[in-house]
Length: 238
Image 1 (tube, rainbow, N blue to C red):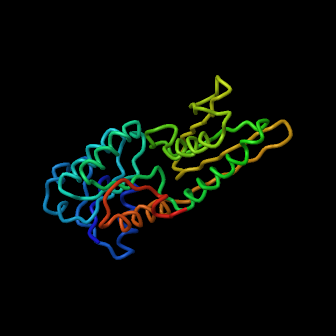
Image 2 (cartoon, one colour):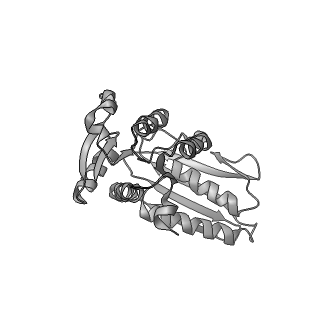
Image 3 (spheres, rainbow, N blue to C red):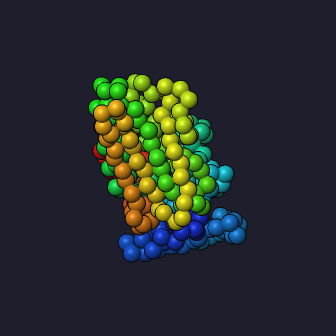
């Protein structure tokens, strides 16, 4: 498979290594200093593009790839207020986007565990839920896209919470998320249920970026020949 990389930071470089290890070819790498390469013959020959950039750039990047018929895999977060608009655009025009707030296979297993635990805890209102996420200082958005996904999954299962908030909750229906930025940690997410009697916690701690990169490359392999909007649920078929 011929891949284009959009964004060549630490994640982009790790994805490149993983793709090459799986026998794929990197035909084009686009970063901030060579945006003109979206119009290059090298980019046009890609079977798929993998995009990890910034919230302000992501949607334009998708559209540039779609204009020449290239499906996109993206792990960029912080733009999803526009997701309904983008999904309509995909459906109307026959585009392809595989998006996930987190491509790690372990994180997606953790997300399934989170949904199940929240469903169980709906029957026990004496437990107060909260979340903490820790990422490296270069991460632009807070809370992380993964934290938002985890929080929204909790809200679908837990009747006593209707919205999430960044920082301390000011209303009883808010799910508080603490977002910590420090060092170069790949990412940690902890869900906590606290009662006067005890505390239940589940945590996922990433050790490196390889797990995220593998998931992104698997997603690119998955979308070849497909049209529409896809997530890790489609890939993993939980």
